[in-house]
Length: 218
Image 1 (cartoon, one colour):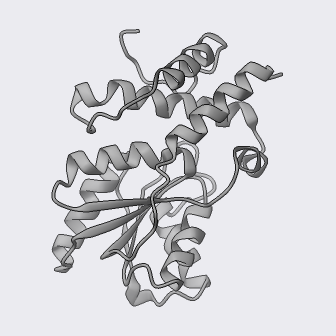
Image 2: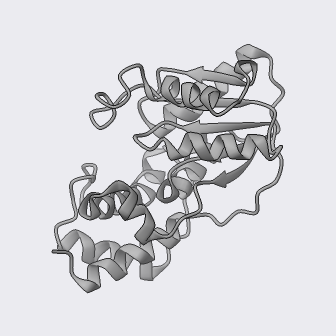
């Protein structure tokens, strides 16, 4: 059972992790691989709305996606996009990335190799990964403007879609921890984290939501 306080803290982190960017047309969209095919669906929707002429889907497999997406996250995303009517010429696949940093750096290399001229990138991720993706991309790909997007949905609806509330809260906590510790390790640019988010994160850690944490010195 998850307490009322923990749900409130998770909602606060959910809101913070989203960048609330106003969408606009970009040179390319990069769909960040994960267990969530909604990322592919949202990327396709944005393509059909004319937000970009080219898509890169990036991702290998992970312990949470190996059974569901045995050919790799980027490959399955591409297959989903083609099913939804996107022409194959508009979709590139980066099949090797195993973390957010590799998603960005490997996608950049792929676009460089393709000769694409990129001035802006629409980063499409899970809702609670928007800020982490933005901070990572700004570190690894300076000089490009990043606009973040995800499937528009409430925290409660996302929990329902995943079907595992505790796992979602664990992921929110893990994403916030990375925003706190990764800048010092050179993996992303610093983000302004409000005290309320740090306090919510601390309470959730103390309540045992720790399965998605990376090793740190806290």
